[in-house]
Image (cartoon, helix red, strand yellow):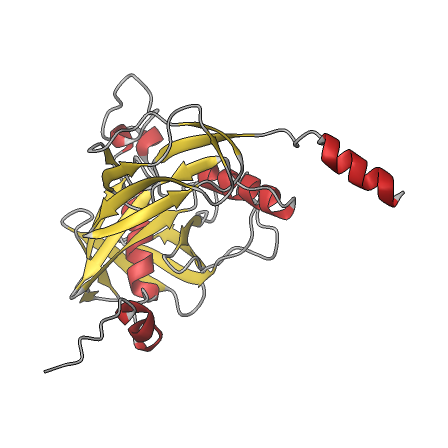
Length: 277
């Protein structure tokens, strides 16, 4: 019989040896084209009046007088790396694509570190087969499936034994990243507590209006048979309106902490400092 020694560190021990799928240039080019050709009517905030399918305002081919303009789609991969795809429409209905490492951009999408990817001799010929479901790159059909979620600006890509979200670096997302970077640089912490994945609230450790310390658990979310204790990043008054059994989405704000003002100097502290003066 075994000694009964158990542990819960299997993932931590095996993770360094695991190799995860990383999308290649062809898969990224297909994902960018799927995003570019997404239905306009499905987008949040799209114009109220429906447009004809052949309306020039729905075309995303980069047309202009002279040489067609490459259209750039930027992605943030699950490992937080960035890639950019430059797409140019071809006369035969396919697209030419170049893939480059992502660059730093400002809130308006202007490049801060170097030129955007441009078509070169190694450009890929890419087209979508049967809508954004599968892709043909350089004449070869990829074992790839694509689905576009315009609500979250995400292209879901999957193949044999793998799937991943590719977050499109829209102007809104770039602005959020820029603001978050400024806050981190200033040493600030987010007052929002977010759920890392969809799940069910199994415990609420505080009540609405309670004062919490930084690092204190606010509530617990169960997802994929694991419990995630979500903690406050700052000290202050908590605003929370969830209860046990509520369902939450990935990245949903589950609580907000109103940061507390610096604690007033206590009489004992003042006396101690006076004695050392």
